Image (tube, rainbow, N blue to C red):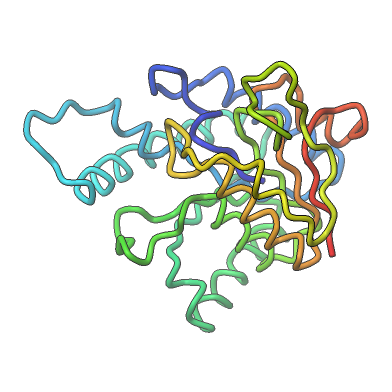
Length: 250
């Protein structure tokens, strides 16, 4: 499961503790019902940006390194406190694109997450922005979540955004509707807007690209609105009645 910065932050760019707590409640419910969960979480840079007022200019790399280093500490500690209320142990996994290109690093990373799951520890994954080389960075956490889903042979990848799914028109147009099911090989690029999200690096184009690729690998992909109350529980209990876009596996 991947949750984006636009779900975890408010309109002012601050971390939305209430929304974060609600998502933790739902993940705990999934665990009680025997779902294994890996959480790919954005929000570190947004977290760190609100922690420190810098009185001099920083370039884009310096900003990412500084704010992610500070923000990741705050983010993971918040998750720790929230999951501790349910006696759920968490483990932090920071990774880079290079870790998916080296067979040895790939297998080590997979083994680490596997042993966490086998011992009831919830992996919380994010890109290691403090050391990632800009030209080798993930496009965003959508891409990262897709690679994790394939690496761990997941049954389903859930991408939580701040919209209900992929629309057959402009989402702001009252006449537009969410496309509920996408078949393998179906091309919907004409419906995808290229704008990136306001708080993160991704957008619907990124989600569509990731979802199409992961579905081709045989994994069901769901794009849904992380701001809807009980969205994860509703997807599990009554998926037909719950608005979302689903990419059928190959």
